[in-house]
Image 1 (cartoon, each protein chain N blue to C red):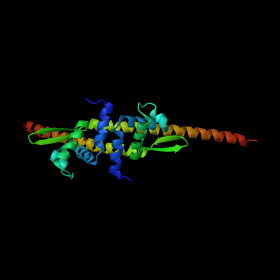
Image 2 (image 1 turned 90 degrees about the vertical axis):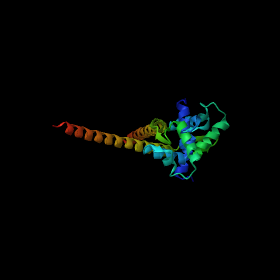
Image 3 (image 1 turned 180 degrees about the horizontal axis):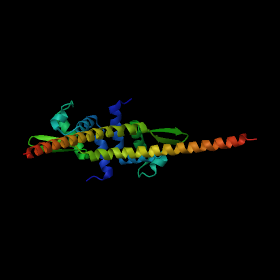
Image 4 (image 1 turned 90 degrees about the horizontal axis):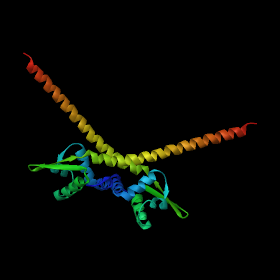
Amino acid sequence: MLNYSGRLDSVYAALSDGSRRAMVDRLSRGPASVKELAEPLTMSLPAVLQHLRVLEESGLVRSQKVGRVRTCRLEPAALQQAEQWLADRRALWADRLDRLEEFLDSSSSELDSSSSEGDQP
Amino acid sequence: MLNYSGRLDSVYAALSDGSRRAMVDRLSRGPASVKELAEPLTMSLPAVLQHLRVLEESGLVRSQKVGRVRTCRLEPAALQQAEQWLADRRALWADRLDRLEEFLDSSSSELDSSSSEGDQP
């Protein structure tokens, strides 16, 4: 089992390829067979299966074979974990900007009040 | 210049390493020198610079050298693009679930009404 950081490593690595993102995009619209996943991609079936393996190992996708058809599904938990990590960093960054803005506002009002005090006779 | 897909490739690849995520996390709290970025990481300075290069090439980070100090800053646009891609796929997935739920609700009410019609004498 991968720990939290190892899981993020493999989810982001899985997403760093346009063909794998196209497969995730397709599966976010609903389950699909390997054949359906392969159709829009200009690559051999073994190449598709290799990409599918990377997606499954990352936990983004799971597949099940019934008879001759392997059906693939998105695992939204892994997708959400990757999104949450990014959202948390963006929140930290936005929070820092807010505090910077507050600081600049308060500095500028202090400056205004000290300059208007200076204007008084 | 990287296109949208190439940019996503390199942003996700940059995020697929725990040390680089630690650097992004640090920079989401404010700019930092290379020395400050390296401090919590147990690796050589050349290794830190190599990771920094990957982050800069992905567009997640930019750095500027003034005198002897190189200061690194987060580039929130790249972070946001990577987050948005994930958010869009999650929305597609959630939308599909909603439609599935609506379908099941309507099928079950049709079933209820046809079964209560059947109950009538």
